[in-house]
Amino acid sequence: QVQLVESGGGLVQAGGSLRLSCVASGRTFSSYAMGWFRQAPGKEREFVAGISWSVDNTYYGDSVKGRFTISRDNAKNTVYLQMNSLKPEDTAVYYCATGIGGFITTMETRYRNWGQGTQVTVSS
Image 1 (tube, rainbow, N blue to C red):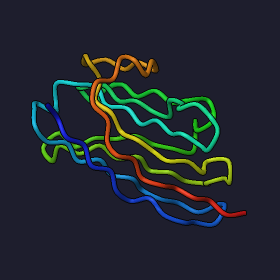
Image 2 (spheres, rainbow, N blue to C red):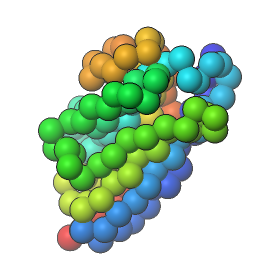
Image 3 (cartoon, rainbow, N blue to C red):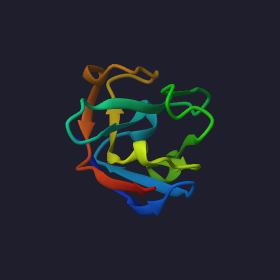
């Protein structure tokens, strides 16, 4: 069983930046794709970004393309989400998750382990 711990959330003004981190422990981190999802109040959880096990491939949700960057450091068992040009509509709880396989998917059901989430609030 893998454990995931997110950090880096907080309150930021529109146009600002935050960097989220997710540290994994418990199994071979580097063999699996990683994803970031978010859930705003009253809305379903949505895919934000994913990165393959090999770091070669990344994929982003339409609403964050060009503003967010996902990366990973397999030596540190850590995945990051750099968020720039933040907007009030980015306000949500952000979760990282480990994929069942090594390749990116946007399907929530293809992620096995989830962190507890970190709150991101963007003020206008």
